[in-house]
Length: 77
Image (cartoon, rainbow, N blue to C red; front, side, top):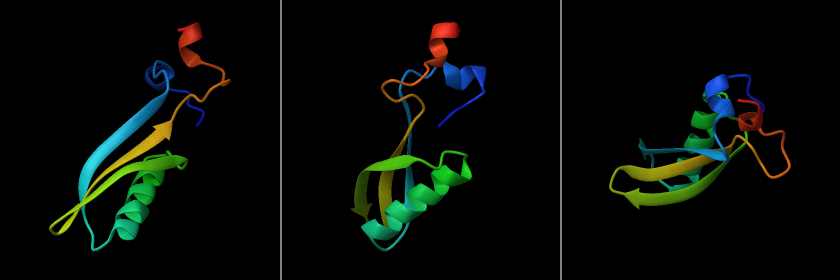
């Protein structure tokens, strides 16, 4: 993900978002997580944690702001 935001340039590697979503399966939870991240402008994300509990799932999605070999924003900050 390429960002023009000065704040996002300070992120060293990744941004994680964790929340609880209403769903009926792990597959649905993963789909919701990916749609949520894409809706926030982060279309490339990995779902790194899913735990079903009652009426939904606790999920953690990770978006890599800078991957190995990228042009690191913090070097110019």
